[in-house]
Image (cartoon, rainbow, N blue to C red; front, top):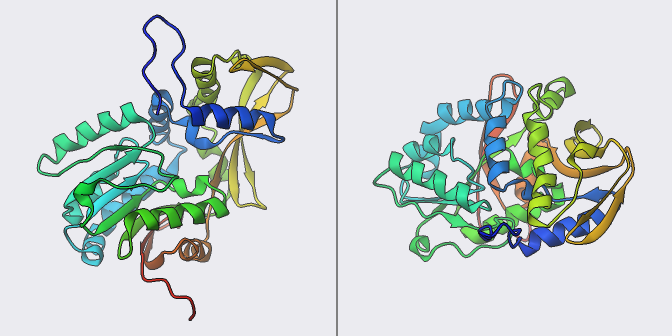
Length: 325
């Protein structure tokens, strides 16, 4: 993870993986940088602001579903599971789950350490009798969970349709990684955004107040701060578009003029109209979602959605794998 800024004003020592992904992403064509690097402290704060925007329906819709289904989830998962949340953020949805499942422990996992610790303190204050074990890590990789919960049955929690940020192949790989981390017999409560009209989708990722644009542009600012970059921020603009063929929203940083800059002392050039692809948000129909879960080693147990069918929450179980029907 990122080390603290050096007090004399020199740039911080950047995460080597961040450096490698940025340099490789700027060199490839078309250019692309993984969306996970949005989430430094500033990026995490901006994303939390996005979730409160009127155009951004996923958060309030999922909260409505979780609030409604608490009793059913409790009956299906049973008490005493250790809740492991992947990409916990500010954990605004987590209290809804913790109040209904009577967990033995809560393990929030997030790549943004400062943000993780702050949100964990808030949650600990709200649940003083609950063992909270914040875990700073990249959940995209296999994890050895804290020994404290080694023998406890697990309930993975992956809200917010974060699974949509990955290509289908990466999403299936991540689900298999989660299964390996949580173990056989674990359960997973996961949110997935539904396919719908572009008239609803595009404004959710290109809001009138410009918060999502600031979230996207913060990636360039982070490159300048942590990788000694000279990227001219005024040479780029935020773009969100619906790719119907791939059933996904795409976010790009588009060059509005030709620009030369350096990152980590390496020179780069970009022409007006070229983009850096920064995020995908795949949307899934009901059958697509169930197939994806099975491809990742999870057997769907239950499915809930809102009255308008905008969003869905699935409960799945890591059952013993069957090599044949």
